[in-house]
Image (cartoon, rainbow, N blue to C red; front, top):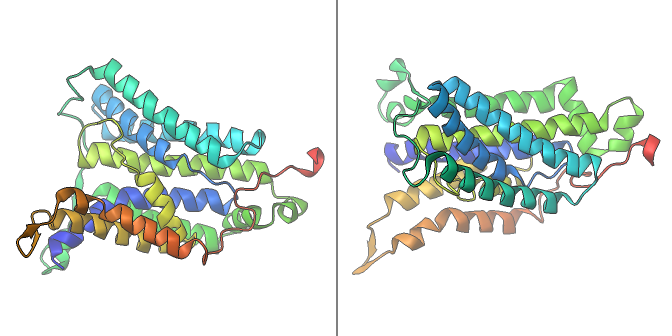
Length: 309
């Protein structure tokens, strides 16, 4: 297991991790947000547009997260206020995001593609670590969003399990009726949780377009929002667990890249087969953990307040 593969694992795990964290926040409040894939996609596209127009990476990231929040807010209205089926609502928004970004990409950039001189998110070099053998090669030159993702794991873990607002959010996802009885605003809490999940997923999408590809291509998220949901389940709806699961999926992707050109005996392993490795891991994780993991008790269940019951 070389340092290069581990460094790539961190980079490749980051968008999955950010989507998984979004899923944790939303589902801990009782709302299933399948639209994380769509939030990632609009974050990737509008991050590029904002970077192109403003030449500022800060503006680009803010714009990406704002649009992700907007898409998530639509899902929140459908799921919380209209009490629609949360899976159907999320999938509809994913389809909308795919079509909308493809259409706008053509309208903005035609067939030439996005500019190559976009303001990208910089890497952060940690000089003391760079001198440490092996470890320096893994973490000393990682992107700023990679570090932000790791910091968010700690912050969200502490928020959910060590603060009063986090306890209230979890109460809304476990026993909303009891939470409302003690004065917690169930709907408002769920709205903010879903919007925050959209912002986190959109940040993951912006990372893909501004830090990895430095451009936008149709459907570039490649199902990472769905893999993020699998990581959330694998991690038992906790930020630290989501990090571990995301690293496993990231390692699978990094390994598939490093094994390209490999052969078994005289037979070369097809690249297409190797590229399926992350998705195979996702299927195995979901198949093995969905039945064993217990989601929040009110997850995915629409709630009607006492005044409207």
